[in-house]
Length: 207
Image 1: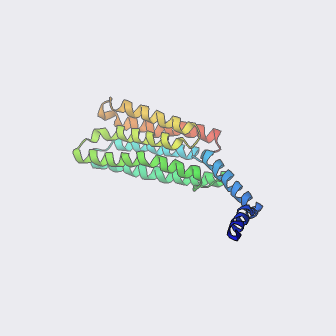
Image 2: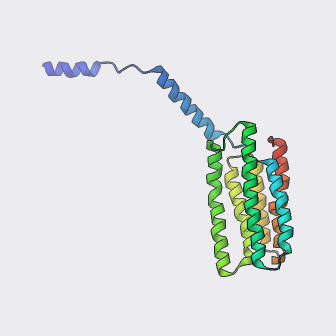
Image 3: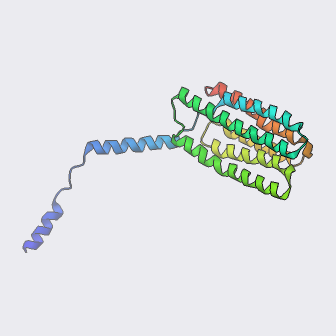
């Protein structure tokens, strides 16, 4: 009988009081994480994109004058590295102006979603090089870059994925054009599209 009363007493004992401060901290953390997931990354560089486009136009001109395939490929590899550092520096500057972070949740999502198509472009390029299908490299570069911009742009302003779709359209067209127009298509895509959309992003979204 005493044991039954003990069990009953333990069952009706009230729960420990909830710490209101801890509950408030948990709620604020949940609200902050929810807002980060729903926020777009607006620090895509517009004016930096214009500079990337300008260097691509120059690279297209230089690559067109190369007599050897190795030299042609080196021109575009150097342009890819230059454009990457221009974009990264411009993005870092814009995050300083807008007081955002390159390591925010939207920024990480943009990077992680852009990475798979870019890696596919690298591996496909290596395969094309191995089997000697050099004429297919340019359409593949334009298509995979466009896919990366569309995927990453899902977490940015609307102009970014729209630019990606324009890259995909030009890349598809490039497959049906003569190979000697490859540098022209590179200039139109990585050059003209970056300049046009860079101007739009710069004007509408603060640089």
